[in-house]
Image (cartoon, rainbow, N blue to C red):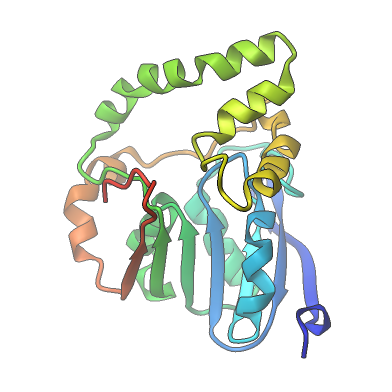
Length: 230
């Protein structure tokens, strides 16, 4: 059976204040694909989605305000959205494969019995950083983004997109242009940012304590150019 012969079901999951567009393919152990960076959507998994579906029941979805999911009308949390995905699709527990780490770790913390294993790809997260310390880093992050913001002000969207994507991958990467196209199509979110998910400040600041209590099997995949602090 070729990838193109695998049936794909699509739809929307109703969440408080919005809808999440999802795709499902394959049978067996559920495997949920997550993307942490806001400027990419579920298409970032195009090269893996159907390949994994030969072995798992694979689910991918767009976060609010990206891809085919509309922006939220109410406050929400990314953890609650993921929990609603599982509930709507009748998934008792699943593997989580994430580009990043934050949502997967937060979900394990809140719903440990719903996770069979986690795989974190380039998990750029500092588990020892408090919420206040993260906010203190915000000016440095904005400074790094300043050239892209200036390009947007000059209506040079091509340069702005190139500047943003350089934080995601090297221009020499084989799939650079393909990822760049995904980022470019989501760049409207930079001009009109969607309502971001709410953050549990206490859980965020205590990560250095509770992450040691995570007992599900965990695999870290860290590339040569990744800036991982986990």
